[in-house]
Image 1 (cartoon, helix red, strand yellow):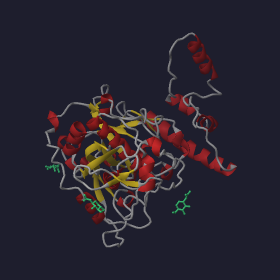
Image 2 (image 1 turned 90 degrees about the vertical axis):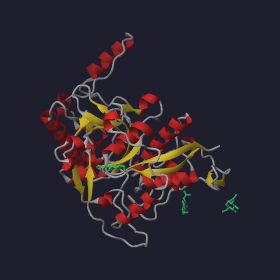
Image 3 (image 1 turned 60 degrees about the horizontal axis):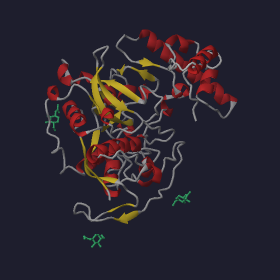
Image 4 (image 1 turned 180 degrees about the horizontal axis):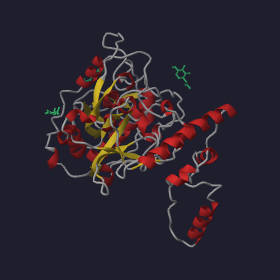
Length: 424
Ligand SMILES: *[C@@H]1O[C@H](CO)[C@@H](O)[C@H](O)[C@H]1NC(C)=O
Ligand SMILES: *[C@@H]1O[C@H](CO)[C@@H](O)[C@H](O)[C@H]1NC(C)=O
Ligand SMILES: *[C@@H]1O[C@H](CO)[C@@H](O)[C@H](O)[C@H]1NC(C)=O
């Protein structure tokens, strides 16, 4: 679908291809060097179109995209020239011709405004199981770094494509890891099951399917239906198409005393789930260190051209605080070169984006700040985030702004499954 050698400019750098071919012929292993900032300076729209196999409907569209590409190239160059040594770098990727609105996310503006009351309803669903399993330790007693990939419980990064299904990808990836941690089996579970089969009547984080939903809803859905494997119901909504649910509920054996059904072919399920307290650094650190990967909501629009390094945001602009995407927190650590603490975040924009599909976000313990609110901002459009359009009584309500803390608002809304088990 995409050209494999996107890191070289075919026309201008054919000598490099020749050199690589020669080295390959000689059996010398080598890696293609990514574009440097000075490469980006002369990187043309024509090369971009070829490298990323872009097609546009009309000559007007082609010129329109060229304009966006040039503006984004300026953003990359300006950022990389002005950046401090410890800051992240931007680079060329498939989003060079995309506007902010076109960056794939998974919380979409729903047709109505929404109620924060409904999010409270979601949170209550499994309160009784709460965080009893998670006894909080002081952060200083937690490991210095955690990376669940190193434990072999994380599947490869996927690409949601032009479908607003981040919520389904993040929830599925998180569940895959929790099932692997508890049951020792690393499944590839079906994202399409969530996209196609889960309904979203209260319009939480969107209208369902490719137009958005939340991790909390997805977790509750999985608790009720279990999850089938990827091959049973493969991802078909890459280009944004709605696909009908083809799975059928079947009476399953009495599971841990519960009389319930699961989808035919379900291999794993969960006993419950929990939403962590909002904007709570200690809880999130404990959860990811002790329990497993966590689904976290983030303001991802400024990530579009991210290439590498620890991403920083001031949380002072609307873009930086507009929570609109769901991703998976797979660990944390400290950058060896710069000493900057980071969150290790798995995205669903494919393995070519960022650091092998991941981004590292600056991690700040609020206790270390003179004012703990310094790392917070207001999300004035919570309607792009996790709240619901329709309240319990079926009314639409206008949601008030919410405080979101941590880089890209990572501390605001996090959830994780409890009691994963294999369905037999
Ligand atoms: C999907 O479901 C809708 C509503 O039930 C139906 O009208 C439509 O024909 C279905 N599409 C396919 C491809 O089966
Ligand atoms: C399970 O649920 C079904 C349908 O709700 C009911 O008919 C059946 O008696 C229940 N079985 C048990 C063991 O509770
Ligand atoms: C974080 O959550 C824990 C557990 O609910 C609570 O004890 C603690 O006071 C919270 N911390 C902050 C800063 O809200």
